[in-house]
Image (cartoon, rainbow, N blue to C red; front, side, top):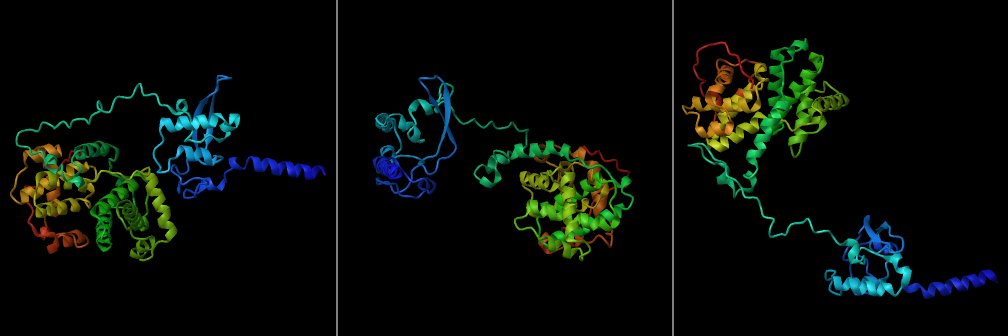
Length: 424
C-alpha cells in the first residue's frame, strides 16, 4: 500500500510540474522544434561552457555558473526571450523575462540560460574602450625614396595578390631570418662525400624536380635541407647520399606543393635502393635538424621580388634564374646569403644583356653594385666554358625554347683572378 501511495504521489507531482520539463536531448540538436512556441529553430544554437558571474545578495560572494542553452530551460521562458520573428534580445525583453522568473521563486535559478542572465551579470566595462569614431585606420606612411627610384609597390595597391601594404615588411623579415639559416662548409667532417658528389646530387634533384613538375621553390628548399643535414651530421655514407636528397625533396614538396608526390614515387626514382622505413626515418632526422622550421628564406624568392620591382623582361628573369640555379651545384657558394646571391645573379644577367644596375635595384635589393662583384665573378665562372658531362641537367633545361634558350647566351669575358667571397 505504501509503495502504491508513493507512486500516486509521484505521478501527481509529475503532472503538476510537467510544464517545467524540457527534453535534455533537444538542446543538443540545433534544428529541433521547441515546444509551445512558433520558433522553428534555435536562435543561439548550442551555447556551451559559458561562465557567468552572478551576485549573491545574502552571502556577498561571486559564483561561476556554467550553463548550456536549452538544457533545463522552460519553454515558456524561451518563448519570452525569442520573438516570433527571431529578433535580437533587448533590455526590455530581458526585463520581462526577469519579472516572469521572479514569480517562480528560487526554482528559477536552476533554469537560467545565456539568454536570461540579468544585465548586471553580462554588462561589460566600457570605460576603457574608445569610441568607434575615435578609432581610425592608421594612415599609410609612404616611404621617402631616393632620386630615380620607382615606388613599385604603390602601383600594385589594386592587386590583392601583390599584398602591396605588407610586401616590404615581408622581405625585410626574410632578410632578418637569413641570419638564422647560415650554412657553413661541412665537407671537412664528411669523409665519404666530395664536392663533385654533392654537385651530382643537386643535378639529380633538378631532374627530379622536372620529372614531377615541382615548383622551383621546392627545389631550392630541398637543397637547403640537404646542406643543413650534412652540416649537422657527424658522417653520412656515400650510399645514403641519394636517400638524403630524395627525402629532402619529399619534405620540401609537402611544404610547398598542393599535390606532393607519394613516398612510393620517391622510392621508385631511387630504383628501390631504399626501404620505405629508411625514407621516413631520414625525414624525421632532417626535420629535427632544422627544428621543424621550414620557413627558410630562399634566393629564388628574392630574385622574383627584385625582378618585379625593376620591371625586367621575362627573358631577363629567366637568364638570372639559370645563373642562380647553377649556383646550387657550387659548394663554394653555400655560405653566401640568399638575398646577395640572388642580387648578384640578376646583376650578371643584366651585364650579359648590356644593361646596368639601376638605383631602383640598389634600393630594393639593399646592395650596391660594388658589393656584388666577387659573387658575380664566381657565378660567371660557373656558366663559362664547356659543362661537365655529369652535370648537364640545368644547362639542358634552360636550353629549351620555353626558357628562351638562355643557357646559350655567352658568359662575360672577365680576367681570371682569385676570388674571396664576402658572405655577408
